[in-house]
Image (cartoon, rainbow, N blue to C red; front, side, top):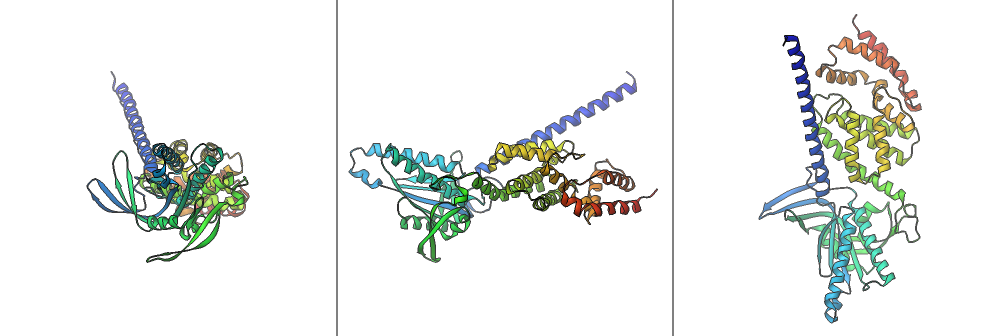
Amino acid sequence: MTNSLLQIENKALKEQVAQLQLQVKQLQLELKSLRELKNIKSGTSTTQEHTDITVSGGMQSKRFKMVTVLFSSIKGFNQLQDSKNAQELIDELDTLYFEFDAIVEQYNIKKIKSLGDTYMCAGGIPQKNRTNPIEVVLSAMQILDLLRRKKQDNSARIWDICMGIHTGPVQATISGKKSISYDLKGDAANIASRIEAYSTPGKIIISDMTYEFVRDFFICDKIGGLPVKYTGVIDMYEVIGFKPKFSDDDLLVIPNERFKLKLTLVRFADLEEYILNRLEKELPQYLYYHNVKHTMDVLIGVEVIGVAENVNEEELLLLKTAALFHDMGQIVQSKGHEEISCKYARDILPHYEYSQKHIDAICELIMATQLPPNPQNLLQKIMCDSDLDYLGRSDFIPVSDTLYDELHYQNIITNKNDWNKLQISFISKHQYFTNFAQNNREVNKQNQIKRLMELIKE
C-alpha cells in the first residue's frame, strides 16, 4: 500500500475518532441534562436556596428561606369514636387524603404528613421556586372545590376542612432514601398551624406574608390580626377566589388562560436562573463571545425591541425564553447549535409548564437566528435583530474582538486583518428588520464599516 493511501486512511480514521468523541460528549451532556431535569422534580439541585445544618443517623437537616406551608384539619373526624362504622369512615378519610395528594403533587408541592384529622403540605421545598405561595393557594382552592363537589353529589360523608397558610423560613429534617419524608419546624410551620386553629371551616386563611405574594392573582379580604410570640400581630386574609380577569366562571375558582400566562411569567425568573447557571458552568471557556453575557445581551434586546414593537405579554414571554435558550446548544458544539438548543428547550420547558404550542413557537424563534437570517414574522425579526444588535451599537469593536478571539482559538480566523475584512463584508450585507433597529442601529452600523476600513492593512 502506498504512503498516500495510508495517509488517506489515517485521516479518515482520525475523522471517525473525532466524530465518535463528539457523540460521546453529546451523550454525556444529555445524561447530565436529564439528571438536572430530575433534580428540578426531586429537589437535589445544587442551586437550591437552603443551608445545610447537620447530617446524622441517616437524617439531614436543612434550613429553607422561603417555604409556603398549608396546615389543615378535617372537621367531623372526632365523630368516629361514636360511630359503629369507624373503619369505613377511616377508609373514606384515607381516600380523601389520597385525592389531596394528587392535587398538591401537580404543583410540585410536598406532602409533609397526614395524621388523624391533620393534613400538611409545603411548597418551595426541597426545590426553591418563586411561585410556591401561589401554587399552595391554588391547591387549597382545588381541595375546597373537591369537598364542595362531594357535598353536592352526596357520594361520601360531608367533611369540612379548616386551612391556614403562611410563607416563611423553615428547618426541615429529611429522612429516607427511596421514600423521602420531611419534618418541618420553624416560623412557616408554626404560624400556619396557628392560623388554621383560628380559621373557620370552608375558608382559606392566609398570613400577610403569603398575601403579599398572591395579591395580584386572588381576591383577598382582610379579616383581622393574630398575635404571634416574638413576631407581633400578623394580619390575616381570606382568599375569596381569582380576580375576575383571571377566571371566566361565576364562582371565580377556575383559572383561565390569562392566569396561566401570568403564572408562567413568574416562573420565568426561576427558569432564567436555572439556565444561566447551567450556561455559566457548562459552556466551553473558549467561547469568549457566545457566553452568558451574550445571552443576557439578547435577553435584554428582545425585551427592548419587543416593547418598542408593541408585542403583547405572551409574545414577549416567547421571545425572552427563546433568547435564554438560543445558544444553549453551544454547550455541545458550535456547528448546528440551534437544533441542539431546541432539543434542550423541548426537554426543559415542560417542567416549567410551557404548552406544546409555546415550545414549538420558541423553537422556531431559535432556528430563526441561523445565519444568514431570514425571519418570516415580527417575532422572528425581533429575535434576529436582538441577536446581532451589537453591530449597530457603540461597543461594536470590543464585542467583535471577543468573537475574533473565539474564532481564532478554533483556528477559523488566523489574523486580525482578515477578520476586519470579513466583518466589513458581513456588515455590508446585513440588514435590520424591525423599525426600532432600523431607526436606532442602522446609522451607527454604517459608521462601523468606516472604522473597520481604517484598521485594515493592505
